[in-house]
Length: 390
Image 1 (cartoon, rainbow, N blue to C red):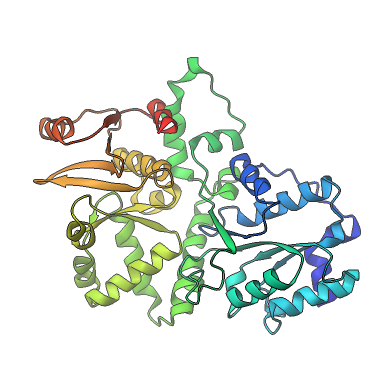
Image 2: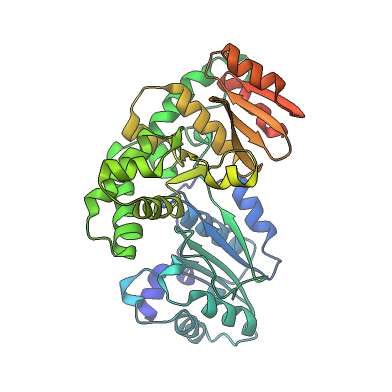
């Protein structure tokens, strides 16, 4: 194990990567703020969204701030060579290598932590009994569910999202001044095709995105849940992407694929838990929220583009606005008498997405008459920045 840990941690031998990595400052600043807090920091989000890169950048910052490199351990727990070792055994080996006593503080960066059985209990025991700061990451929300509440009060979860349009421009070293506002639409149409996964933004490749979807379906869904028919899961995802931005009928998809409503519902939850999709409930009374069809949104526009191509830009625009809003507000869609408004927040803000177009008369009537404290129509890419003020 020692040789493997040295491979994962080249800084133990004063080897520092000279690779130029684009920082995501909004997440790095948050991670820095957690360094002095005892809690375990859990990074989650779509595969290849940059969780590992953020951990590596934070490690570099720790070393640059004169933290002893030998007190920092990074390891990916999905490594086959470690499949027989518990998290505690790996940490004990780390302490042995560097002669670190239990009371000496160490920094642990544990990637793909959910590959270890009972990882919550293992992390709890390490947290309770050692002088340690833990950062852990995984790409599956369902696997992170803590049924025994072992980490309650001991952890903080941070979801890492794909790059937004501003980050996309930053990664491509494009700086737009106010006088260049008209170019936002052009770059947004480019962004739709590429999406927000950092590696793909730097080196756009359709095959990269196809392989990502296939990896998630094979590793995180079919293999993990023991589904033998891989193709039906792929077909299910294709149908989800074709319906993204619309209300989703679990029963209809089930009939198309000749699977039961319960199986259809279960497959949907698998895609949601791996962050490939997000679901938006309808606003209304409790029974309406629970029983009405949910709207489906893609987590990354590049993945959506794989399946939808260059049509219905309004759908991409609404999807993007949803992604900008989802972690800022408790969101719903509004549906009254067959008329729909894209978003309604729990604090009574109505938001309608219109990609360089206008509300029709029925929409406008509902938009103006429905009880709301604030009403916002976003009809151009340039106006998306208004969401920063909410």
